[in-house]
Amino acid sequence: MAAHDLDHLRTFLTVLRAGSMSEGARLLGLSQATASSHVQALEQQLGFRVFERTPGGVVATPRGVALGRRIAAHLDALDDVYAPTVAGETVTIDLGGAAEFLSEVVAPRLDEVAGGSDVALRMRFGLAEPLLDELASGAIDLVISSVRPVQRGLSAVPLYDEEFVLVAAPAWRDDERPLDTIPVLAYGDELPIVRRYWRSVFGHRPDGLTLRAVLPDLRAIRAALVAGAGMSVLPRYLVERELESGALVVLHEPEFAPLNTLYLVTRTGELERRPRLRAVADRLGEVVRG
Image 1 (tube, rainbow, N blue to C red):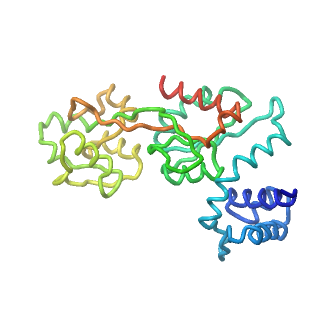
Image 2 (image 1 turned 90 degrees about the vertical axis):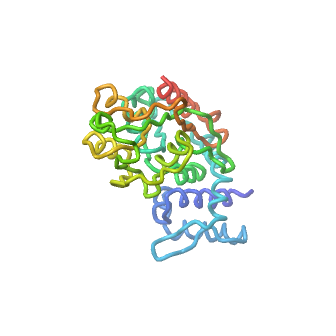
Image 3 (image 1 turned 120 degrees about the horizontal axis):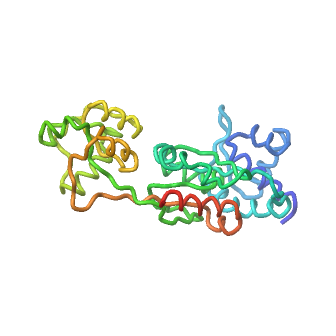
């Protein structure tokens, strides 16, 4: 492969990660016209379009996204050969995951996870599937995912088992009301977490429950529960302090609590190639499991 072919691939990958032709050009120190010409030359050589041009900029085509996944690790490895990490240089590692888990479990022990002044962590909050797509394209380095990835080029190891509990303010338990008469606070309109708990514990759908509110943030649900707004199903790590203080109580103790495995996901081969990333992944596992 000629040197200019690598330049074209590198320009394409940078634009893909930046999400903008102008920003990709800026990161590479190129003019926007030069970056655009690199991408056009690459498309001519490949015989398909890697970006769709829109009034708002460029959007990767499905084949463009697939190409990015194929070449990202290889180009990154070449860049490491030509520009090795300088001793003492700070490396930024992007970690994606659910806002609640990163905020409640990881953020309080940030120094332990980073492990020193030579690593800076940048957190990205979001849903599992979009974050895994960003990981595959090289935009982020690690993802704590609630689903096992199916994308090629990604590797996952079990990190943590979330235990789900049905909780409410003590007044609802003391009132001795049947569960199906207590209003529900949910993460989504379809009661996703509550529905899973009901099916796992009671063996049927949560039909007949009264939905009080939909709050797309588990921490907001926790706050509303403490205020006495109703009941909900939350991961135990999120309500541990409230259960210990008595601000919340468990309404039902099943024989087997529903669990959901969280996975630590990386691009295949990245941990072996990047010692600092491997060290962060190892410390993250220690912190979460500890």
